[in-house]
Length: 166
Image (tube, rainbow, N blue to C red; front, side):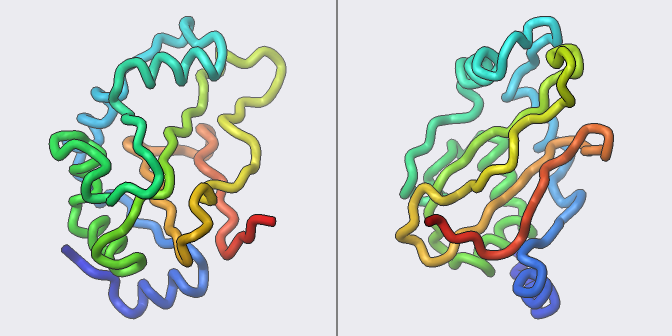
């Protein structure tokens, strides 16, 4: 495990996020994509149908809020292996301690261009994540991209800093 150093902690405190590009071995990325499965572009008729297909595969398990992160995913799963990558495990422990609790997880997907009629492609509109369990004093979000994300693909928008639910 590689704990965050003082510069990384200071960067997190100042910016509200850290990036760790390329730390996940390609084998884990490929396993994750294989576990997720493939949906041909022509079969994407709605977000609900697409997410329903993904959830039917069982590759993204339903995990209740409040479960220990260490027990949230099967040891053989790509997600569990991702969380065990020394840089990832060290960042999590550095920021939320050695026994973190899972608040929520969700798979965000951008749909193929063929899905959109006249509107611009968008996976989701601006929203606030990770406020399911407000009892916790401090949460972190892990965002994982199993392949390169180019500007043309859209990426994931992020507004760093504290957000308070009203």
